[in-house]
Image 1 (tube, helix red, strand yellow):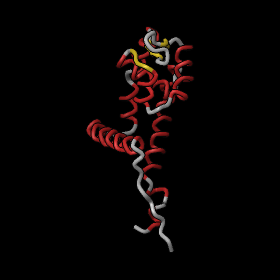
Image 2 (image 1 turned 135 degrees about the vertical axis):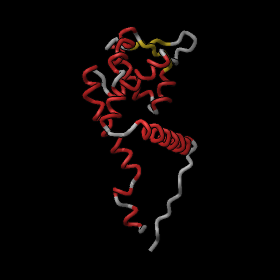
Image 3 (image 1 turned 45 degrees about the vertical axis):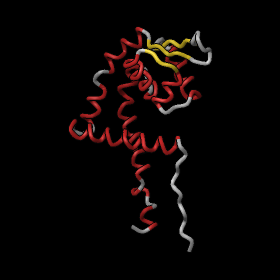
Image 4 (image 1 turned 45 degrees about the horizontal axis):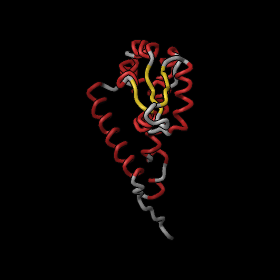
Length: 159
C-alpha cells in the first residue's frame, strides 16, 4: 500500500474505533437520558453495581480517567444521591465512593440496556464475545505502551 493510501482516513484504525465509540454512545443516550445519566456516569455506576464501593483512584484506573475528570462527575452523582463520597479515616488523601440505595435501585432500570443495544447493532452474541475480547486485548496492549512510554518510531521518508 502506498503512503498516500495509508494516510487516508478510511485506512485509520484509530479513527474507526473513535467514530464507533461516539456512535455507540449516541445509541446509549436515549436510554440513559430516561435515567438522568450521562454515559460516563453510567460507567461509574456499572462499576459500583458490581463492587458496591471503591476509591476514586480505583475508578480512575478502571475507567482510564484522571481524578480531575472524575471528581466533578462524582460530585454530580452525589448531588443526585446515587453515590456517597467519604474521605478515608486512615488516609485523608483517599476518597471512597459507595453506591447508595437510590443508586442501587437504578440498576434494575439499566438491566436491559446492553442487550437492547447489541440487538440494535445486529451483532450476534456469537460475534459479540470475540469482538469484545479483541478490543480488550488491544486496550491492554495500548495501555501498556502508553504506561511504559514505548512508542513506535516513525521516520518520514526523505525525498
